[in-house]
Structures are given as C-alpha cells and as structure tokens.
Image (cartoon, rainbow, N blue to C red; front, top):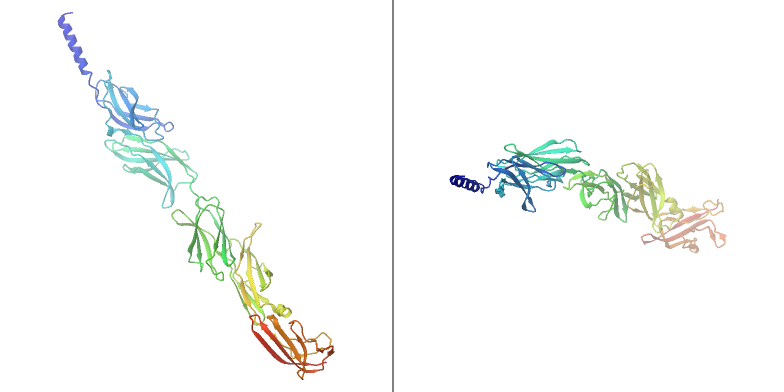
Length: 498
C-alpha cells in the first residue's frame, strides 16, 4: 500500500472516532400510563431522538427518590412496559435518556420534565351530610400543552366501566354522590391533554359500608318514680350512627332539648328530675346525623297526671289523662288508693275500658266503720300497654292526695228496747283523731250516767245495770280534728219505749 493511502486511512479513522464522542440528543417523553390494573405495570412512550446514531433508550424510574435505570430499550422502539412498577400503590415517575452504538449516553429528561402515572384513591366522605365517595388523585405533570380534563370512569359491582363525570384539568378531586350501600365501586381516572394525549390511572375500588342511621325509635314509657319522670326508649341495634337528642315540651308542640346521647345500644333510659309531676310533659327522642340535622323521630311519650278532690258526699273525685302515646293501644287501667298511716296501696278499680278517666271513690262506709281513720286519701293510676310480649310497658302517674273534712251527725231520739233497731245512741263523727275523744250523757238533774273515750262505743240506755227512764237526756262530746283542733258539742236526746 502506498504510504499516501495509509496516511489517508489513519486520518479518516481519527475523524470517525472524533464524531463518536458526542452523545445523542435528549429524547422527549410522550406519556406514561398504567398498563395493567392488576399488576401495576406501566407503559412508557416517547418520541424518537433526533440523532441518527441512536442505538437505544435508557429508562429511569424514581426509586426511593433516586433516579435509577430500570431498562435499556433498543431503537427504534418508542415504548416500554415496566412490569416491575407498582402503580397500583403510588404514582410512578419516569425520565429517559438515549445512547448510541458506542454507548455515548445523553442526559436524562430534564428534572422538571419527568412524567408520572396518576394514582387515585377513594375515601368515604359526605357532602352536606349526604354520604359520598371522595376520589383524590395526583395531577399528570409536564405535558407541554397541559391537561385539558380528567375523565372519571366507574364500574358498579364489577360491571363495565362507564363515564361518570369530567373534571377540568386543574381539579384533582371528585365526590361521587348518591352511592348505594353494600356496593362495590371501582374507578379509573383518565387525563386528556390539550393535544388529546391520554394517561390512565390505576384502578381503585371501594366497597360501601355506609354508617347506618336508625330505622326506628320507640318510646317505651314515661312513668313517675319518686317525683321524677323516668323514660325508656328502644333503639335500632343495627344503627352505626347513634346520635340522639332528647327533647321535652309542655304543650306537645314546642320542644326544647334536655339531653344528648351518642351511643349504640338497644335501650336508653333517662330520668328527668327537673319536673313537677303534677303537670304533663311530652318527650321525644330524635336521631340526628353528623350535621345535627333531625333524621328520625320517636313516638311521643307523655306522663299520666292524676287529680283528686273531695265532695260533700264523702267521696274522692279522681280524674286522670290517658297515656300518650304507645304505638299500640292501652290495654288496661288500674287505680290504687292508700289511706294515710297504712303501708300499702290497695287496688280499688281496674278496667279494660281505657277511655275511663274519672272515678268516684265512696268513703262513707270506711268512715262509718272507722270514724277515727285518717282523712287523707292518696291515689295513683297505672296504665298498661297492649303487647304480645311477656312483659308489657307500664306508666304510673303521680300520687295525688285529697282530704275529707270532719262530719258530725247526732240523732235526737233512740229506743233501747232490745229489738236491735236504734238501740244505741252515739254521735256519728267521721275523720277525727281517736285520741282526745270524750262522750258523756247526763240526766235531767245533771248527774253523769254514761261516759266513754272510745269513739266506737255508744250509750245503750242503761244506768248501771238497769234501763233508764224515758225522757230527755243531755249529751256532751269533745273531739280533736285530724289537724289538731279541739272541738266540743252538746245537745239533748229523747229516750222512749214504743
């Protein structure tokens, strides 16, 4: 070979070598998108490098905030599926570089030009106390033309995906309203650029197990105990939102809150001590949502009030109201009485006619046989709900007492002839204190012929062991009323023998 040829060959080889030290141009990413919803694999696509000597492309992914190479892809490929990605757990970030045949490597995509997958996640939420599924996702970054919109797709109970809504490109949150309970909802988000490039997010699913408001509240009873009103309510044990407001009214129309409850149980009891049990009160338990809005009302429970008075016929007049209002009817009514000084209430009246609200209690027989009995008579009424249960709900009224006044009747004649008719003379006095009683009989000359301190004993017409003579006799008696007043009375009685 001629030496000139050798020199020319060496010169050309050196020239070629000097060109290979230049790396290819930096390639430009097109889009990244979730490729496989199950595995989280990501597909990365890019535009071919402008350099003619590109041999391939190196893909980088942000791993623990460091950019790590994950694959070399030979040219002329312009896409790559990253099967090691986990885009179903978080956004994946990518950059790319190009290399030539002698492995000159370009710079990576500028740090502020990386592309990322969209990661969407659902949350249970509410809007104005209406339950919803809130979707949040990260924005797709670094399309030069920007994001035009985000399309939200939904699949209900694993049906095919359909378009649910479209958000503007600067909004990365959406509230799915009016969702059904116990339903599976799956979502994907698709970013659309202003040049109609697309990127699809991971698939995220949410099973609705919405908090359950109560479906019923039952007021069991309002009953008087120890001058307080005790309330009982049966609650829905399946409810998971258990916020209640107990409210009270004096007219059954205008209610004011008196207590709040936040517990899930099947029973709620409350004792209202700030009451006068001789008045009616109306109670209602209200289920409220997290915005304190009333969502469900119980039936109204109102206490029974009993009223008593006395009349001139030695009777107690007893009135009461019907219980309001059980969900079923009133089954029966029971009226109880206690005489002051006794230990137990006595049932004096019962009825299945639940519309009875008035009773006259005749006390004349009691007074006649027990004149020194207390003049204080107390009553309460109890009403029972009609029920198929073993134990029915009951409501007891307040205790109301009435006082009978002392009454006196003195006969003006009697005939102690042994025929068992009008054979004994004594004043008929009711409702007096048995202590301090004195009864005396005097003849026409003023001699004492009979006396006793026992209110039940009268004069049998005898003076000593012999019957008295017919004619006029003077009586005198002294007594003490129940309230402690000392009183006396005198007059004449005629004895005769038919």
